[in-house]
Length: 438
Image (cartoon, rainbow, N blue to C red; front, side, top):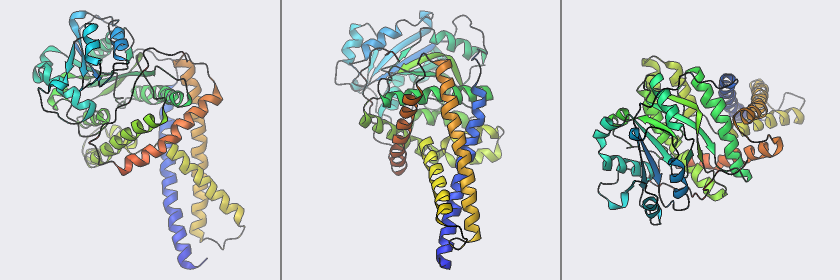
């Protein structure tokens, strides 16, 4: 190999080594977090009498297939009736969503009346319209918290009892996210979604809560303090992932996002591959937008404010590539290092620096592979056994998780390419009216 070729190969190996080290450190961090996820989940608050006033908004656009079932489920909520209101946000629907609300006696807001200008796109714009319709700044005088649900969601009957108790006991945090469960897991794709959520709920969300780190807002099944939301202009968000954007705003304001492991929201996971890719591409577009636009203020906060661990945690979360992308980097590293070892027994093909990079890439990749295996085997099994009524089927569940993860790579890449495009909301179709058996 000529000298120029050696230099180029060495530089490329050096860059890949840096990437491999980043993946290893990222994986080590999240494996460390998993240690906080083991053990029985125990309330760190007492159940108290109903006090908190809730406004529940249910985002719905052309949801005639599921909205009736959702309304029936929400009528089962056990909480003092004078302390909460539910409104369906019938957002520019052209089907029978509004008629079903009327037939079932459920209050709804029709954004198609266009009483206020549209602020933003998609779901956040519909929610902002609803806030305007209901009085906006005056809402904080009537309600303590806003809860957001999607039109396909079912909730546990005691959801407000638990959130009220935690909200009061924890000194009125800015937001609380509840456990996100699944209505369906009938095919490999929806099962992959469900498995991913179960692992995340215990070994990311519950673990972070126990470690005192900010939890992630999941887009549905969360409450946000009404006065905080009004102070920041309501649901005026710039990205396609308003949940992540809200989370970052709270963290930058030194606020708290907590986790509740004891009540669940059940939502429908896509079973159609095309619909799933559209949904996850939207997630990725929004995620990268929030990551890039928050990098500078978060780094500045890292060097000026207290709570540096929380900021580092959020930066890792913002710029952590999908697990499948990281696994691919690990596998490439092992293949490159192994291929070099098999191809030659002499030192003429690479410079000494290149050989050191090969050795280090192999070591970092093996470490990451072991950690990934731990997360798949131990964490998946534990989360399913402790938190769900699924029977553990290692082969099918593993295949489903890999299928979900590796099809996420395309969405991640497309989301990165289109991260500046935050003007088109892609609706996810829903049709499940009941929770299916695992």
